[in-house]
Length: 278
Image (cartoon, rainbow, N blue to C red; front, side, top):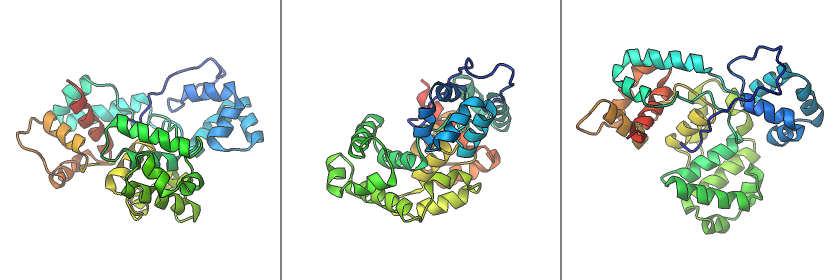
């Protein structure tokens, strides 16, 4: 999936005397220690606080948690989750053994919440290469940064010329204005614990459907109990894992997911892997 980026490990710039929890993204920590400007550009914090971060690994960890840009699930915890899910449905075992460890809830988000939603809108019903091309053009039109203010200034004509469909252009403008008028505080969405509340806020916007919100909550917010049965890949993966001769309908799959709560996102992730695995 395009929104996922495996986290690397880099410990040299973290004080050795501290015992770092599994939730620390060490690569990002190393990058911040290398230059305060990186974190200022990424998070928009004050210069003073940015400098303070360099002096304290503990403060840095708290800062990551505040912005929800850290891994919330350790590898050990994810392994336990996956093992428990395989006990519930042993047919997942071959796919799990042939795949990497699920990354949902563990990887650091590299974009703002608004930018992530914009990318999800552009990606709807498009091949990855086509979506990446159009997204790159949009970034150029936005002068390098996808923000509500910059997207709102791009004309519908320019969006269309960049390859964005008329419907998606309208959706992007709606997203931008929702942020500008305060209707939705995109930067604070991670603070809402109730997934349904986030779903209701975003799907109330024109052109934002369940698939877009599901992908956003899984890969940007790292929510573990999203069950995107409307996604064709999830359904095809389920069929492959269970060797079904007929296609399964979203409503039927929705019911089958009940026993996997509260980790349905993990099941969906392995359904995608089943499709990817040859």
